[in-house]
Length: 411
Image 1 (cartoon, rainbow, N blue to C red):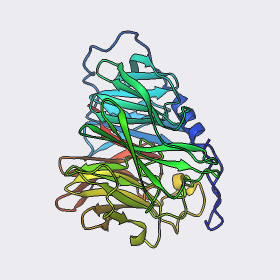
Image 2: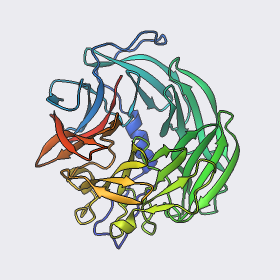
Image 3: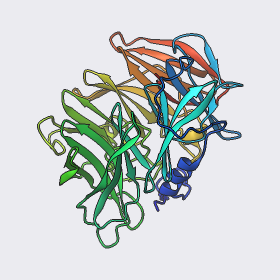
Image 4: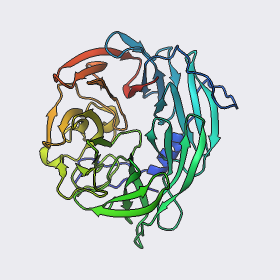
């Protein structure tokens, strides 16, 4: 179990909770108004599904709704009387389908008549708290609390086209210290014939140690494990796998660290970005983009969305506004920045302050970034950022929700 620490130097007291239990509870929540079919899918997605998937959240009573608009640049969409309720933190949309992981089961859904309908489901094992798309039809599901000796990751690899398990096993080789509690996988990236697994170790106090770990294995064999470390920061990736933390540019992999106080990861290490060079299989010793150094020590960076050409978007929580634990979710505290990964610079986007920490309200395609901003004073809107010109345009309004949790392609 992973307990959020309480730090005396912080301006607020973090609530103690269990990360793995939290993820498990989120995974077990179910859809409303769904029906089940037992045979594998052979149909095309229904044409009524829009081009995009927006998941909006309501705080009271707590609920999440899927909306599928045709466009993000104009008009409005509302969750009032529309959309399907998806009370789960799974954000797995591909080729017009939605996928969901629950303990013991992996399910495939399609959207018709404003209802998510089960196409097929297959059994899986483990706590299934992590999931990573390796490509458009292959997903890796990871067990967040592997019990094998010296484990890193228990995995199940699934072909989502025909919903079959192609491989299961364990990536091992990490020796834990006598008082260490667990390994926590933070990122999984496939590059060529290698799989790169970023992870951390939680110590006796359930705090991430000062070391970032990288395991590299052959893919698809999933063997020949090589482990390297780096101490410039820790937790290489995201504690929530629906929040992107890696990108690949010119063959180089970039990984954002997750050390902010929302999950009590590590108060002694900066937020920053590592690079794994295209011809190497370890952290680049000559590269570290120290984001905290550019922001007066702020470690509250969450999310890394690829803009192309060595640029990315990230969100930073304003430390002066984060005065209580609930501020991460119930208060407008997040700013958006464009990062230049080569020049190691950041540029603030002229957007209203946003809310929500475990959200991924950014979608990038065709030189445009669509950014969902949830403001208590200025409403919930999708803004279009033109990467080439740097311009921002206010677009579609999202009504009937307290925050925008997710944006992506649906079909």
